[in-house]
Image (cartoon, rainbow, N blue to C red; front, side, top):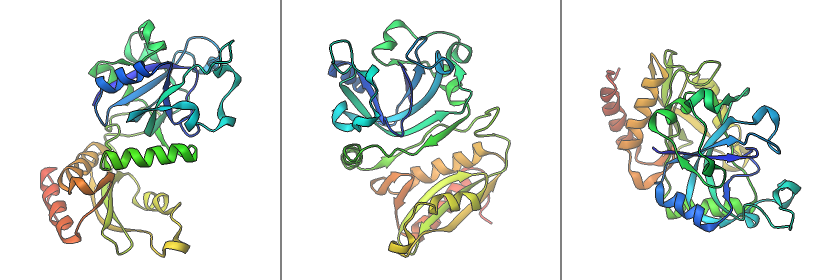
Length: 289
């Protein structure tokens, strides 16, 4: 996975679920340099209009799609501040790439230089620059939380088309590592789990430190009164760390039929899934008990 970085005036993917730039060419350069599943980190500029508490700090990162869009056609008008227009009334970032998943660094956010040991080059103000593997891992070690991307109706339609064109596709997100002050802990008892949506052949794999809480979170937004079905426990395995739980999750995602994957959900026969699960237990050094 590659991680790129760009400077921004702020980062709120819940209402601005785009990586935006000044020209089509900048967007195309990023797409040519990247592959599906790569990410972009957002770093606050060193001056106004970035808020003082966010200046020079790593605000978050996100996976992004594979097409450029007209920014103004995607954003809700009431989310755009006057500073987004220059002195001639021109919108500063007319082209964008939709974000497909996003994470926000937990506050207080971390200073970029203290985290990776250097400033971004000057051109990161107008484009995205690739970070080294070591810099990527240092950023992924920061405490973070995933943000639900809602956006406008136009954004939801573009995101839906992106998933169709890419055939759904799995999404890894950051790997677990020691994160002081929150986030993943490599020495914490954790679980790899599979939940099943009602009696359907739709499953979801993940890892967590609290199975009951995770199940509650998954069902919080399921309209049970309409669907009469919800996520139910199907399989789980305890591990001595989140790293092992994450490793087994990835083994499962690699093994299930790829054409049926959307993010961490997939369609497969329950009997085949049982066989996959047993094999993945062995791959992570566990016995199927």
